[in-house]
Amino acid sequence: MPRCLGDQFLPAKAVIIATGGLSYPKTGSTGEGHKLAKTVGHTITPLYPSAVAITCNDPWIVQREVQGVSLSQVTITLYRENGKVLASEAGDVIITHWGLSGPGALRVGRLVALACAKGQGPLRGEIDLFPGHTWQSLEELIREKAAPGSKRTLKNILSTILPERLGKVLITLAQLNAECPFERLTGSSLEFLVRQMKALPLRVTGTRPLAEATVTAGGVHIKEINPRTMASKLIQGLFFAGEIIDVDAHTGGFNMQVAFSTGYVAGEAAASLACRKV
Image 1 (tube, rainbow, N blue to C red):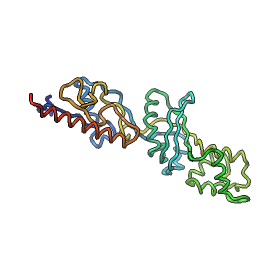
Image 2 (image 1 turned 120 degrees about the horizontal axis):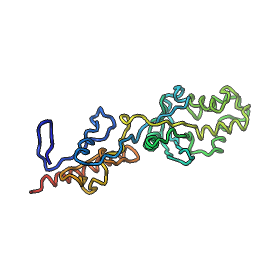
Image 3 (image 1 turned 90 degrees about the vertical axis):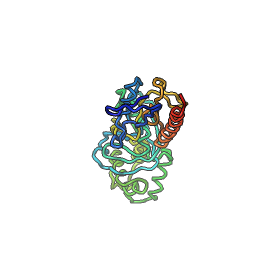
């Protein structure tokens, strides 16, 4: 298969295209591989971000009240317009001024991007700050932190189980007084506060740009590639490896494995073809 380099043609028995997707273009993944594949007749499925941070327009996020706050092992759940669950993932989360980042957020990013591409956004979401607790056990935990007859303020008590700035946001959302002594808090007010902690509401508007995504979804259609060799079914001597293929996995580690595995298979098959005597 000849390869064109400027005005030069370099003859080759085998060529592997492993140019990546469109994520982090400064590293060289600018989409040239997709253009080459399309030029020779391959189908390129729509490209969109996968493993990507999500954007939200909730006032407590965009006003930067909790920018930089890290949350350990929370659960993010997203809902469709009909109330059905679109995605639910657990993991660490970092709150930014535009939304949510960190492993937990990146794991739902792909479905958010796909939903928005279909015109289904914005999406309603929730963060369970204490997925290891039920509503009842979380309320009991808060009561334990506030000893009987305690005059500790609500703000002070929440700071023992949550980042202080996030505690203030929860108190505001529950329309409570941060300086209120816990002993004066009504049962219904405490119940509402706990509900905020178990289902902190989110309004998800989309994702960060594809250039900022960890992984690119979409690419050369897998039906046009031999899975045993990564060889093109359309062009003799052409092989594909890595993110240029329309394959993306759940987390970064799995995507790296896809790249390593397809690269190995494509390399073996291409070398075998190149060494074959005609």
